[in-house]
Image 1 (tube, rainbow, N blue to C red):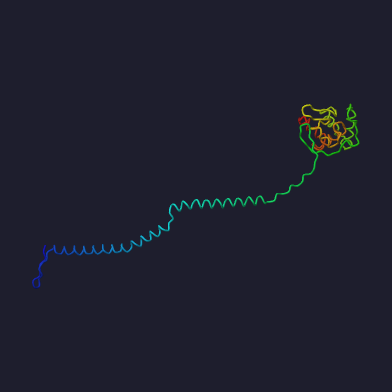
Image 2 (image 1 turned 45 degrees about the horizontal axis):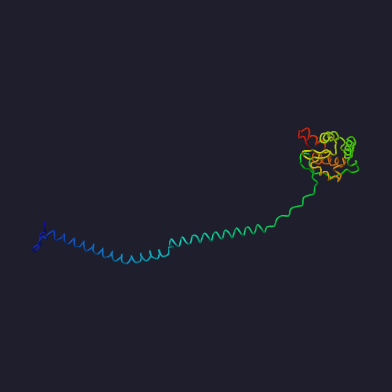
Length: 237
């Protein structure tokens, strides 16, 4: 299509191709201008970005530096923990230990089973018996009855007599071949009767005094010992 050119009041028509070419040139110029502006901006911004990235990279530690720092930090923490534990051990060693109270002195004795108990020392007292030689069971029993009566324990005679009769038959030299129990009460060992007299091995009065005190101390009375030995079926006292 062509435009009509005016003659006088009417223009002559222009070819359409000419108008299209003009538009294309204008668009191309605009695009070129934008490209030139973009390149200029990039040239300005790029050094700034590169410099910032370079500075940031310079501030970050390298892998080698991180690896070297970790063992040093671990060693420092380990040294601190060791020093702390040493300080605590020193404090524990310096802590004063309590002074134990002295235990009260007691004289220990044991029955034919080997168990021990506390005895009160009384000794044979005024009761005498010839050392060594033969013995008279009747006279030994008389001494035992008198000892119990003097202690206000005359009613304990039956229990005491049953225990001693079964243990030794009132023989002051009786000795158990297997356990080593000795004397009228069959003390184990017999030397425990030394708390009541140095003549414990031959003097029935010393042995009887030890036997009575032992029964009182461990079972409360000869009848308490009888109950443990016979009624409870233990066979020893």
